[in-house]
Amino acid sequence: MALLRRTPWYVLLAIALAGASTANGAVNTAVTAGSPPVEATATSLARTVIPSPVSRIPGEGTFTLDEHSAVDGRGAAAPVAEYLVNLLRPMTGLSLPLSGRGNIVLIVEPGHTPGGYDLRVTPDQIWIAANEASGLFDGVQTLRQLLPPKTATTTRYGIASTTITDYPRYTYRGAMLDVARHFFPVSMVKRYIDDIAQLKMNVLHLHLSDDQGWRIAIKGWPRLTEIGGSRQVGGGAGGYFTQADYREIVKYAASRYITIVPEIDMPGHTNAALASYAELNCDGRARSLYFGMSVGFSSLCVGKDVTWRFIEDVITQLAALTPGPWIHIGGDESSATSLKDYKAFINRASGIAASAGKTVIGWHDIGWATDLPKGTIGQYWDYITPRGGSWVLTGNLLKNGGQLIMSPSNVAYLDQKYDLSEDIGTEWAQAPLTIQEAYGWDPAAVFPDRDPNTILGVEAPLWTETVQSRADIEYMAFPRIVAIAEVGWMQQDARNFDDFAARLATFGTYLDSQGIGFKRTPGVPWLKAVP
Ligand code: TNX
Image (cartoon, rainbow, N blue to C red; front, side):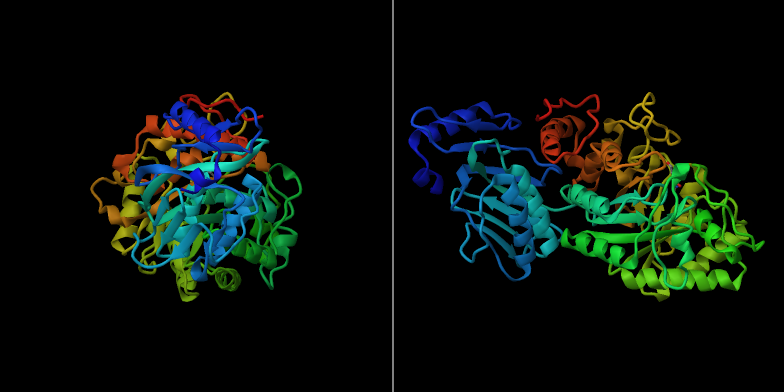
């Protein structure tokens, strides 16, 4: 019992008393004993976790994280151990050396649930193990939330003994950031990666091109970024990622076990490209840059050879820059393309992506195409109650051995307004989108007659027509993205809103400590903001 050995009796008593008063699990109490002065110990006996683990069984006693603690993570566990100490050192003020004999042990080994992790806290040790480093990383996210928050005087952190078994419902748990409508630099994308990694999300889809901006440099086509990347919605200065920037994002994401899915939206949503190169237009005339918020007015010229030289270059370069298995070709709202051209375009573009070694993802509209590579994935964006067209189009994709990523717009679109009286956000997908609605849906119930295994996972897109800053991103995302993360991670029968809301209230203090300015949505018993 390390705690008993190192801790004076009066502090132990204070911990026990604090524990009794925190039996509801929501409150963390920093305890300072009276005279003689001692180091302060914060303890939280049953701190809540989001997403909630599959099983969590309390044990006896408490582990104390203090100046004697060290992290032991070797071999495949080493990068996660390094991530953990880099995370916990500033959170705790402790030195936490990486050492072969640490009492926080991280192990990659066979025998755990695929995609999951096991975590055990005893008075002597914290032990996290998983089949893969990615599972271990998710275990670390859980551990991080078990830690009581630091106060000015805290030097020891009590973590109650527990045994956690955990694994996700879906393998694909994503967020999307639209960097086309407004551009966000590498630093902000990295910040969003950290924001979503703590929710055990493992995919970041980047919407890299749209009518208002082209955001990725493509060799041989410099005007795409010089012209197409120069502005954004509203007409202000835009920006773009060099290929080195994009590689840096991919690498940073990989260090958080997040896969980047790049999207070039086509054949519609292409005004920025059409403004950059006159020859991509059927009439050979360059379009003007577009600063508005409409959709469905632009199209690549499907019959021209130059279009296909362009698409080859874009897709093969992006595929080469992207280690993940997926490439997203968009395909939504192509109302300025004839159906015949649309089908021909999607058939051919998806074939190029497949030849570049990638599994194709497209918005579910690509279900119109008749010759998609086997296993092509549709991203579903219609409502949780599908209308006729989306039922048929998703059905076409599934017939072809495909799967669906579920992003029903009326529950998962983070750009939908929280409240119609606010300026930020759009409204078209049955806004307002409340936290209750973002939480209260089941991906497998959208198409109840279909095999649930046809669902690859869930994704929360953040379109950015009205989103202009890091603060805007985090405000629209949080807390609804937390709800979507639970939809993707937890088993359906384990979820209920009241339990979520109670955990979310505590999680809010944790978001405060990270400087994430979230919406204090009605229906959640939010705690007071930490000053
Ligand atoms: C729909 S649904 C879009 C985007 C817009 C968004 C705004 C879909 C695949 N596309 O082009 O940005 O609505 O909410």
